[in-house]
Length: 302
Image (cartoon, rainbow, N blue to C red; front, side, top):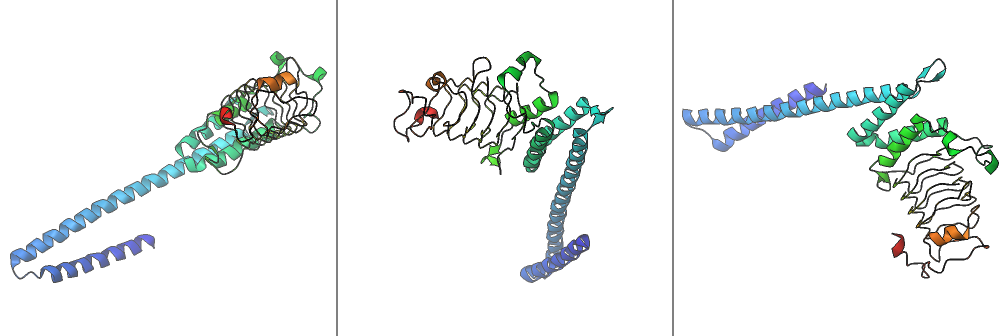
């Protein structure tokens, strides 16, 4: 029906154009009529060419969308691949990297894929309620900790993505109750990320953008947070204490962060970080003299 409608519309336009040109030019000689016919033919030829280009572009677009949909479906199937009851890691990694490639080729699919990948982490790197807090004596040596390749692959995609919350992504990443120990997230854009009750032992978060991040109950023991941006972050009962030497907060930006009930926080860690009058600290610690006295003066925290 759509094609038939276009054909009828085309015929009407041709007839109307012929009538208009005949009225406008008003040919009286055979040569003038010939010129009118030639002009009309050229117009119709150009119109046909443009129509052909449009339909070719439309066909290519539809084919491309169909190919992306097919690849998307195949990649989702690969995410759940198993072999003899265990994860088929090769297939899963193939699916993960196929989804990453689709995000680069099809920006409109970026956010749905981010939701799928973070949901995968919440499912396959999930911490139970009883696992979210581990006593120091039960923490294994870092060399014995497992860093599953599927988890690290997704973390790498998150780290390397070019759009993020308020800059192309409509919502914050949701990674609560996930085990992200030993993962690499240097300079990652994690603005407002939900990492509540997540485990980040020995995770590399140097230079990470954790502005207004939800880190309530997060286990950050021995995490590397050097030069990380934690402005406005919530660290209620987040564990910054030591299994070996504690979270590295050297030059971390803590302007406006809530540290009042952070666990294991030491004076040395505060002294190494940057903060201001809006930074809330535990009653048993002192505000470093080097911190900005004016709550609006956070120029050194940018």
